[in-house]
Image 1: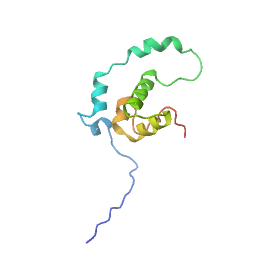
Image 2: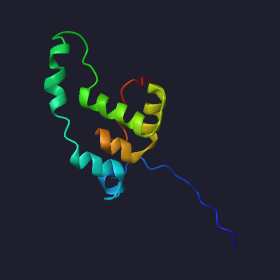
Image 3: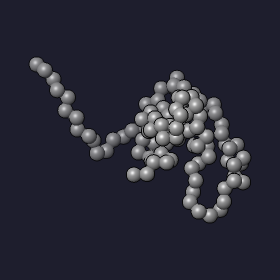
Image 4: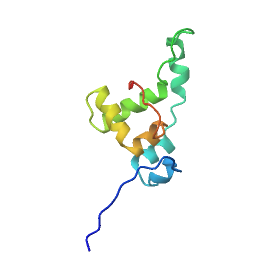
Length: 105
């Protein structure tokens, strides 16, 4: 008898991103050893006190690093690729349902 998969989207699901990124994954290992907290102090003098909040400078740096490592040549491709990859989302500190910088719906 032929089986047929019937997909039904779940309304609620318990999901923790870190559970699905393997321990030996490159971006997981990089996240554990790369400390970019110095970026906040280094860049603070370039930010004003009024207006809209900017992209977190550490997230921006990580996204540029992803672009370099994945050989992505545009900001849009970096964001599109990051949206589809759980390991990159974990690396930059975003969850599956969070809107990435630069994307407006």
